[in-house]
Length: 186
Length: 109
Image (cartoon, rainbow over all chains, first blue to last red; front, side, top):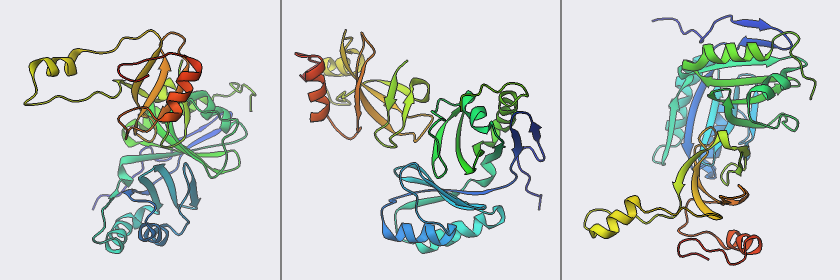
């Protein structure tokens, strides 16, 4: 069996913020009726967190749930447990109309942390970063590629994108985090 | 630059996060329809100066299609509404009537 590798293992950049490849993360794209109590219970059992509300994101450690659209949730678990989590969901929701797909290896995850992390994201995404808070997820674009991000701590962001755009994402985050490039808006 | 609000995820984003999908509320005429109906469905589009109803997709976001009412002259956005409808809802019509008295668009007014 080949060993699973994240998109850019050990990629790091230090500037006005610290940009880093966050390693492997188990991700399951889940679609279905999010208001159904069976669905809510199954998602909670797999992720260990409560169902987030619109544009919400509940993440503890490597596990969590993120609201992607009115009928889609991103389920996060440790990478090694993703396949088992899909199985668990399929078992719990047998007979229901839903989709659970392990997309762990289709994604790249980065962290942007530091005093100016907010600014780094703000330079690249068409989002009002002045009001962005912990517990929120925003699907948008970062420069030219689709991405989603949330805060996993004060001044610390997790950025998720497609693995095919990982190098681009790392480069563009690094450019935005260059030393001496702080604007001082936030 | 248009600032649109996606009715599905509630995000107020700028134009580059969305993608325009052309005129709203088209009725499809497919196989079995008359040539005239089919031609109208395929080619004839509104090109108004003023109120216009369009389809947009939140492409760099939740991915959903929705409708937007806006002004082609001032680029003012009057509001957005669900894609699961055949005509603009009353709230949107009220806004249009307040801001552009006497507006009409295809058979809506």
